[in-house]
Length: 297
Image 1: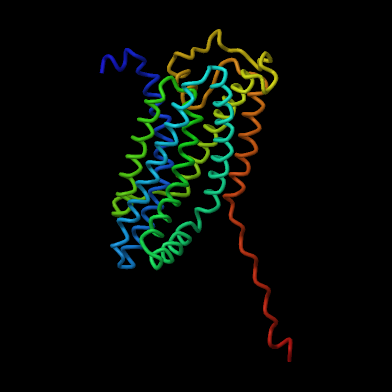
Image 2 (image 1 turned 135 degrees about the vertical axis):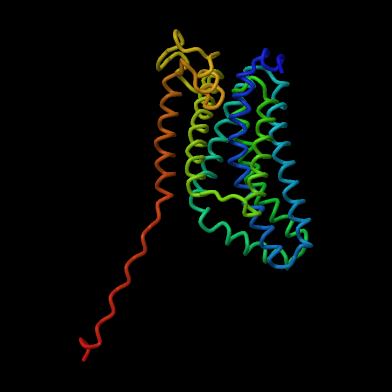
């Protein structure tokens, strides 16, 4: 424990907390999907299909870990400048896909349970392979989003191994919460949970976008590397507790370029605005008043 702290405890803890929060959010999304599939299979008296559901979930988790490791450690054999290019492109791709998934989930959460039940009803008729495929795709969608989000997040971390450990611990917490939800032991206000964690992911994705812009500026694909927006490094400590948290979770740096700041602000304003707008429900249109019988007489 002493060695753990002496070798940069706060930094390690911060990396694990940040990736752990991502693991809880994305793990709970996937857990709810699994809970709906299992509950529907049990209610339909098709417990024989549970093994196919669990196999699909296991395959999706393996894909999550494999995708993260391949992208992260596959770039370790190239030059530092080439690694900047890959990190920049991977960050931008991650931001695009994560943004789509966050906005899609904001709208689809209202009817996703019905869609899953309908899909599983068809898959039960088709056979075990179809149930496996449905579970893999439903959970794999969340797993792929998590892997891309973690790629951009972990690029700024000093130890990619600790970010992966934090992510797995967050997923374990999400699995425990899902089990308690399934048993009816706890209740969660999902509307508020996905609202607050959605904003958290948007801020994290904005930091990843700023990191990707900086990486492409270093490589030379984007201009403005020397145009510093502000510099607070004289009093801002990146090694302090606040610098470690802001840098580890949100990719904040005390001397960003103008292009980084512009990209960050535009992303938060535009995506945050769309995220809020998609959560608003449209009030039903009032039905036209029926003509009174006396008027027709």
